[in-house]
Amino acid sequence: MEKFDTLIVGGGAAGLMAAVRAASLGQKVAIAEKNHSVGEKLMISGKGRCNFTNAESDIEAFIARYGDNGKFLYSAFSKFGPAETVKFFNRLGVESVEERGKRIFPASGGSQKILGVLWKECQRFNVKIMRNTPVIAFKVKNSRVERVITNNDEFTADKYIIATGGKSHPDTGSTGDGYVFARQAGHTITKLFPALVPIRTRETWVKLASGCNLRNVRITVSLNGKDIDERFGEMEFTNFGISGPIVMDLSSHVPDWAGDLVFSLDLKPTLTHGILIERIKREIKKFQGHKRFYGLVRSLVPAGLVKLMLELSDIPHDKPVEYISEEEIFEFVKLLKDIRMNINGLWSFNNAVVTRGGVSLNEVDPSTMRSKLCDNLYFAGEILDLNGPSGGFNLQMCWSTGYVAGS
Image: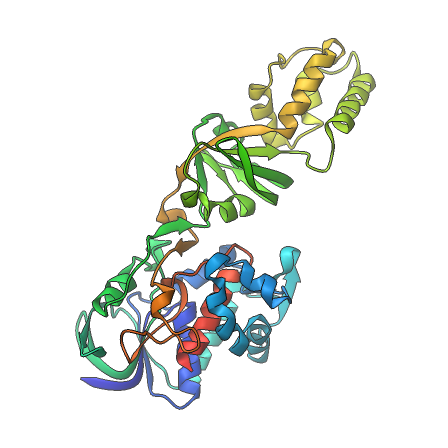
């Protein structure tokens, strides 16, 4: 059996960072990767643009974005946080730019640029990358990993890092293998859910606006008739429900909201009912005798939303605007401010960006990422029970935990 100082299972963002860090400290490091190439999921991050971190400077606010489990990251972020991540990639030749929402992207090259520099660092420090090498099992004895068994060989190491990712986007290799290995070492896996995933609605009329992207809208969440959450930003209609940044952020909480769950969409959150009513009246006066209701709707909402708004309104689409009553104007404004959708669950892991749930944080040392149950086993990345919103938070968690595990 070939022997290494550190053997990492999984060549994604966390695994590559762990490999670079451990090898830079003089370790003989190997990565066992089941795919033909490393970084498969990294390549589709941000639709290939790779939002690799976030510029939020308040570390308390940053950690709060991970919910109750975020406090686990204090130690990792103190060692290798968002600022260190930007410096790390800048030093390797990745210029970065900040965009809306404090999201940090490579100035050019996207995911390919990020993966490329990590690959070069692995080569520089002689990391052995074993592609097409799926791990089948961990052999554990007396609270230590003795060896790992792959499809065609066995390997042993002083220390092992599981960085296999979760179950999201299984087409990239994240099929939940790491949970099996963690259980073999005695670890608890919390309940798993798709997160940052589109949401299904009971209403089928959403397909009338499928593909329509809306900006600067607000979604208010109500559970059993009580408002419990809200988001402002971008969303999109799909054939079966809704998607987009604010919807996918809310999706992470849907499993906790048992009951009658309703999302209310406000298309004009910065305008009051009164201001909207006056605006519509001005439009009617302006085009009186020359416009039908569908033309009025086109002047108020994006083109991709017109068909849906005509469907949801009780006003005949070809009604001349001069015959639209005060009551009809009032009801249409109510619709613009409150399109209600009953939530019918989440899309599958196939459509999810990340996994909610994973290796219980109670069983991992946050200062080293070492297992509390298995002396020479460490964890990094999405396999842990950690997930954040879109905007660079999930990749940052991978970089930080990977760095610490590698250290």
